[in-house]
Length: 231
Image (cartoon, rainbow, N blue to C red; front, side, top):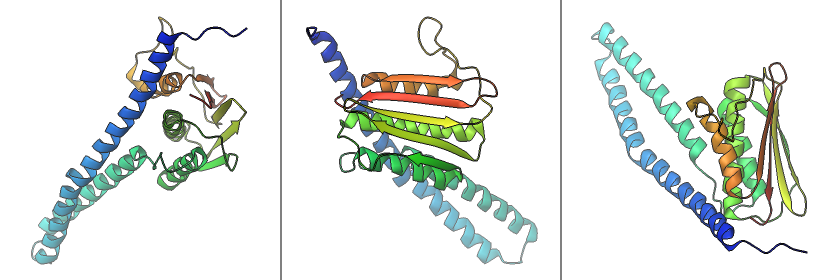
């Protein structure tokens, strides 16, 4: 016998999924504003510095050295900003299926970090809602970023599986591991260092999925996510 649907709960879930999509749209507008505004200004400044270097020539070696240092620092800062914007620039969710979206995350991560991702994914996955695509995209981004920053291992494994009712995502590394903080209940961590872990879990819960984190010192780290196909 099927349990009756709770209309209040269904309404909250629908609102949460819509909020997730709206938040993503706002994030993309912010990324575009940064790219078209401050980044272009910084490129213009870099161009002027380069021009000054050329005009200065050998007239003042000390000043030329200072300009060279300023130019290299600006180039480094721009590279960092572009990499950061690349992380937050989403693929065209409405025009790509989930498998292509996840492949994009992996390719971008390998290109930016040089870390190898052993990626296993069916060539096609069941159609899912926009909210699920966004959630899995962001979770995979964060999990890979954590594996690069904290595990510091040359490769990480990503496995995607699907059943008739759900899609499973697993990200694992053989790094040093750690003692996972509590992510739910009254003892749930509020540490800023764990905001990424909380964010992954909350995104998954918003689409009715489950999130688990397994790690221990010397045992590596494994993140498992399962989301319903029809969320």
